[in-house]
Length: 235
Ligand SMILES: Cc1ncc(C[n+]2csc(CCOP(=O)(O)OP(=O)(O)O)c2C)c(N)n1
Ligand SMILES: [Mg+2]
Image 1: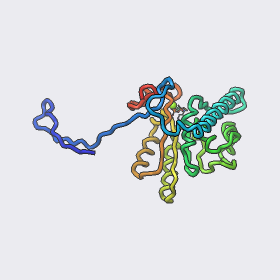
Image 2: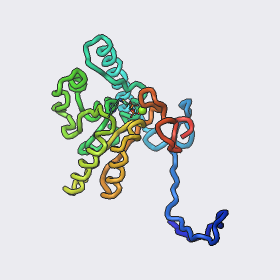
Image 3: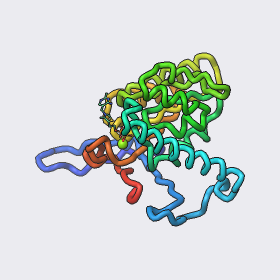
Image 4: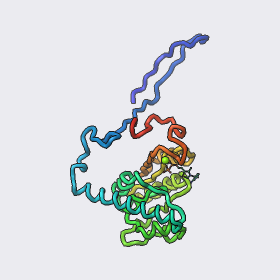
């Protein structure tokens, strides 16, 4: 970063000129491969030309959609206490699960069904959890990610926990990462800013994924944040 000292023009009523120094400049890039209508824009990443890589991902997305529909039906017929649908977010979910290493730890919200399935959490356990049975959080299946955190329903409360997990990895010198998923609405919580700051100060192996579905229940993103990176259509 280049620092420059410049003299600012005198403001009305001001006698001298003050010395100003530029201490930081930021650029934020938006990367996209498809336009809002699903047409390719720009060149695709290498894996997107590899059917062997893509088919399992697509299968996982289809499985997530199928599971989601069944769970919503169970909830609507009173056989499941609650269930937040992740319809339309399958790609994000599956991508998160697929990008993580086995030893990494996932700390997600209530819409991470696809990531959980890819990581080896059993459907039976996900249904147990939403049915109010805490055995659903034990993750005991043969390929289970035993150290992944349970679903976090309170908004953003799991984000500082992710700092603790990543701090432990760093302290133990383990080559692992914590992956913390949260929604656009959760970025309004103080927990989010505390966690971002601590992760930066301590340089932790922690990835934050903000899934921007444009809404926090009925509150649109525009009323939640003034961030310039805002929408799937306008970046
Ligand atoms: C601490 C807390 N406050 C309020 C709520 C009620 N609540 C449930 S979902 C939600 C909106 C969250 O929006 P976002 O973070 O964008 O996640 P999304 O539901 O869109 O995936 C709120 C406020 C809650 N669950 N926890
Ligand atoms: Mg949201």
